[in-house]
Length: 296
Image (cartoon, rainbow, N blue to C red; front, side, top):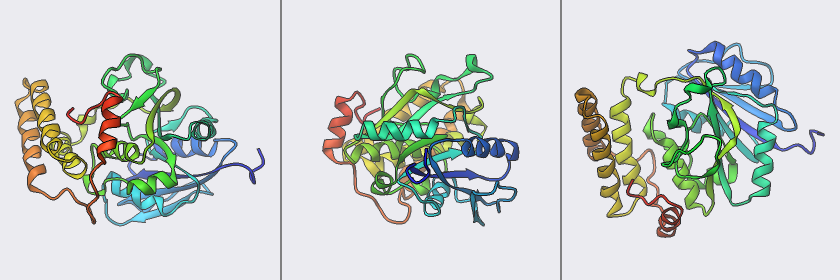
């Protein structure tokens, strides 16, 4: 395809510089994408990027701002009608991934955000069901509208991303993908899980993060406080608190951490810079009619 006619995609790759082999794999797979113009930046979250392939910009954040704020910092560094967020330990398995995503946005103008199927090609029999972003998991290959996303690789348009207000910068880690998905729905579009499109990612345990349970609980409360009107402001995080404690009832330390985070969510401010407006009631109705009422 003539580059003068090819769509331009701004790609933000976030890294702390502690996975150089995986980062190189991600960037090589990005540069191998065909029929698109890549305008990419590697954002060093507390790390000054070095050894980055020619043609890819770098952006140094002297302090680790956390995952969502780090991604936000990268958006201003790239150009393009479309945006792609790629984690440093993920990689494209197909060289036509980005042009396929662009063509789907053109074909389905009400699609606002696309998440591909996450898979570890070397351990396909071990891919966790949590990578399927819906309540009824069914098969990983089955596509559907969804209400949360795995953030390892996402594609949207810059226009819609700007309308959402961007990632929830203060979350640091956990549930920022739920808020982005909800905000996309609030633009009048929907979020699509493309089970027939693949992105590579190793199978890892998210509980490896020291504050996994605390941040999950705190951010669940913040998610509700930032986005849901009463009475869902209280119903949604309380429902999840009961569900999670029931799931972890044989792990008393995990329950203790979760409850501490849940309490912190009510005490601390959920706002990062400026407050956002709540989701519109019409959005909550659309979500409910599509199978995801804001109570779970």
